[in-house]
Image (cartoon, rainbow, N blue to C red):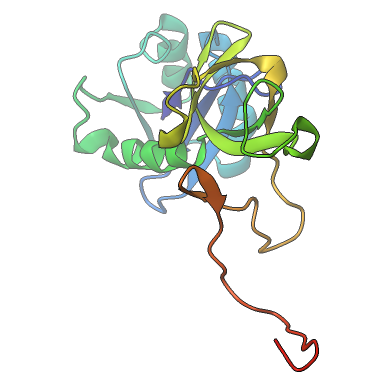
Length: 209
């Protein structure tokens, strides 16, 4: 049992409680927030884990203040759940949760579209430019209104921090197996160049292709 914290805010949640069954290796991900109390930890554990899968024989957690609090200690005592506190440097006791955390964190990278109104493109006029550029990976959130984005190498002259009003989250497509976005084009002599993946059709005009 462990937390992934300091995530971008989503539906008022900024953390995830990760619970892994050591026998089946099944993982449960519970939305939470960084200021959660021991009482609230108990409530979400009961509603999301204990009520659906039964009481565990033992719980392995880190030395976080929530897991060593008197409330949590007494709760486990009353429910006859033994507790194992893992050392600071993750040993084999919590290796499963740590592995799951790493996998989950890879999926949690956020991508956004960037408004092009303040970016000079290669199009001859602003009206011909794409309205949104990207998508770009969010490296971190700065304060409450700005985001640091991972920009392409050729954008070295562009400052990578943008106001929240200039970005739009990339949304999951509702169509199965549909690509979420096209890869960014390569630059050849400072001009965009796309690699043709497949010719779908052709037409002859006056005997010429």
